[in-house]
Image 1 (cartoon, rainbow, N blue to C red):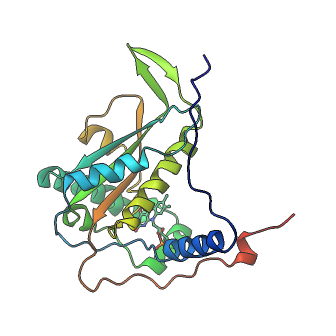
Image 2 (image 1 turned 120 degrees about the vertical axis):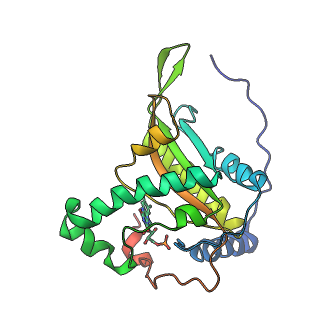
Length: 219
Ligand SMILES: Cc1cc2nc3c(=O)[nH]c(=O)nc-3n(C[C@H](O)[C@H](O)[C@H](O)COP(=O)(O)O)c2cc1C
């Protein structure tokens, strides 16, 4: 059934003002970096909730919003997740992943140790719902990977906007998270995102982003 339609009211920017805003936003987004060392300084649960709810405003196929965000702040549970993630990562770094993968990651200087899983005050674990379960019946979701990817992008943007930092983490395979967090059968782990303040004097790899010429094509 067609929805009731409501007015869309947002301030419109034009000309110089629009140009200035676009430059400001680009530079702000350019300053975002993945951080792998966190301070143990707490962040209130209310803040984490607001970040998640901002992420949950993302567009999604047929507005199905096919995501669940699990917030883990309990230290014992964080430790359990670290143990399980490090088991997988140890295997990844010791033979499971091909040499090309290790070579592609070498610039990061990462290894199987994942202390940030205990140091960060909150872990946000995003699950993708390939279908919904309504009264035990399966209801289709659409473009779930695209939708959940967008929600995660919104989450990273919100974290950056608030002056906090995040790590997009994929301790693959991530199925251990289903068991540890006791998630239902229709949810698959998508990303594990530690959030918090950066460790004092934290350093990040000096990577280059692709140029306009490399990523942009005009027709
Ligand atoms: C889907 C995805 C998975 C990632 N998984 C990991 C990971 O498991 N461990 C890690 O240290 N970084 C991971 N990253 C972070 C990337 O290494 C990082 O985004 C990239 O080096 C660019 O750096 P920047 O985010 O600072 O621009 C992942 C990023 C994405 C988008």
